[in-house]
Image 1 (tube, rainbow, N blue to C red):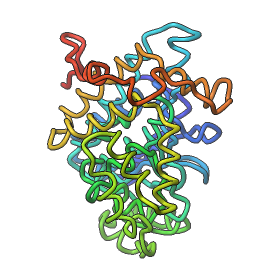
Image 2: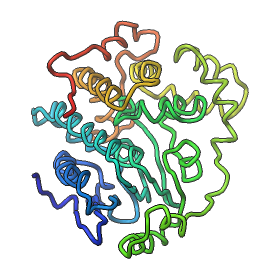
Image 3: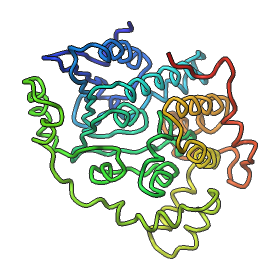
Image 4: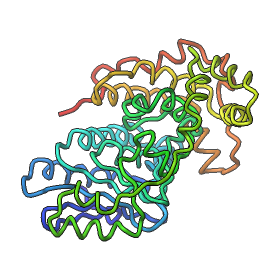
Length: 347
């Protein structure tokens, strides 16, 4: 098993605790963290002595800000390796294990939770948001697509909310996280230590959550539901942008302006991803998404997005192609082709 100081494990009274311990990096996932987590979770999944698994992030800023995309960038651009394949392969196997765990899995989504952080939380049975929660799938802004099984859970959001969140990468707070099922409960962050003590004392997970859960208030996204359903009902990204442009509201114009900064390839592939993924099992979803990653790893926009965000930090990515009109159906379809012997496989 890979050991790393970036993730800690302990077991008390049948409760397995996992702490993501890279607070300066907002607890972003490295390959070693993924491997160590998977190696612990496999035996826990069948151990009758383990009543539940609780996952949290160290510090007060983040649960997990996603995967270590800078390391993936470096694996192609500066330190050639097979990380751009292995990282996604092993992360997705962990996502699937969480999804199929078969016992309570509680994610304390206290703070920033982006991308891979949602992969460590949404697939679990219980997700507790707090007043510090800020969640989202920002991948279209870095030239990628919502992965880690996002096809599965975004397609289960109310109405067209999943497509809206996928294309825009919009961040949501606690009330909205409950509304779109990124979270299952809300509780003040100050109550989480008591919750863990209750579990150790033998309290059932659901009973322990009931003791701390409260109402986060109205969900702002719910107020936009009818507008989102109407404006995001088009049969293409181009139709969605046209509908936004035709709408006179300030909200629609702000969304339009935001979408115009995203990778055209990412947006078109993401639209097709959710269309193809509706109704698929988690295994089929992750297999499809792995195929997509390998096409993106051989392309331009992901590396340009990371360059602009994390390397040069000029926040001015130059997408190729630069417009939706130049992204052809063949360009989109390429992302979904089977990889033969290289396809993701599950035990």
